[in-house]
Image (cartoon, rainbow, N blue to C red; front, side, top):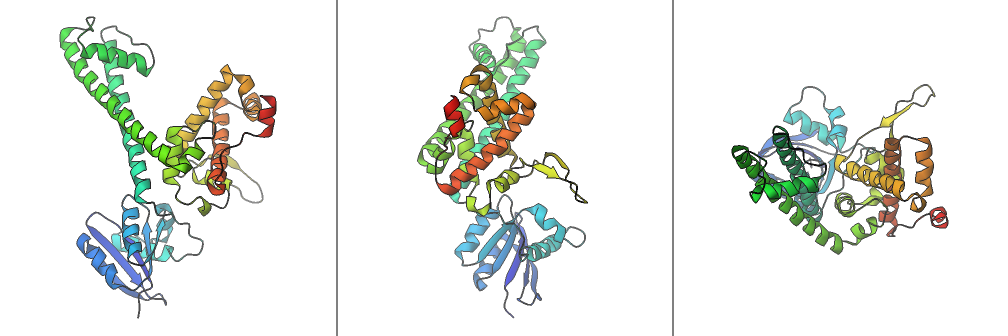
Length: 344
């Protein structure tokens, strides 16, 4: 009998394969070394291959698609219910093979090499920003031991760090100054690396039409636009803007039963990085609204009049996600609502 469906549990060196026929009969259940994966699938006729969406899944999906197979990626959380008993590689591969055939299963679009490269810039920058924060906080803590308080804000901290590198921080004891100087050098090096990554992101942004269109939405800047353009492979994969917002975890959790609707806090499902960028962008809009209330969106003013600030920023992030979905699907730029233009 011919293999029609394959479930593969990805790993670093040992891959587990579970293959069935059109009638559901198990034909292959075996482990493959990394070097055996491509020769094994090269011998198979075109078939349906299921994988869990993980760090290496997009690479393998592109490789197997090039061989003529149909590859579908699934969120691991959606595959887990199909595992019958204890977790093993063989049980995972069998569950993947079962899940990929379900008509209601949701799949993850395969990312291109260009998209993954842009996302690698984002992930690296995010890591370096956390490292910079750790180094600056360490410097602040050490200086506090000697009664020195740096004003709030990264520019003030980096200004003191540069003084320490130049040997101008005379208020610090010599022995402590050596330690602070070493931390300062690392902080400046990390800051320079962040600037280089941001220049690369800016160059990618200028060459990407979708990212430029997303950036026309108020509150969405360089980081948000490039991250969304690199992450969302096919916006038509979502039926509506609300489904897109739900995918980002910006819709309420539903715990309804017996005809009674109970909506809780936002689900926080999906990509945490994208959600954080959207909420941060809306927070900046709210802050700008305090200084320039006449130029703000009247819908934002109406929300702030009756809801707490954090609720408003999340609600605006939800609305922004829907607008971004419409921009991606229709190929347009953001247009300010007529009511906002009339009141401005």
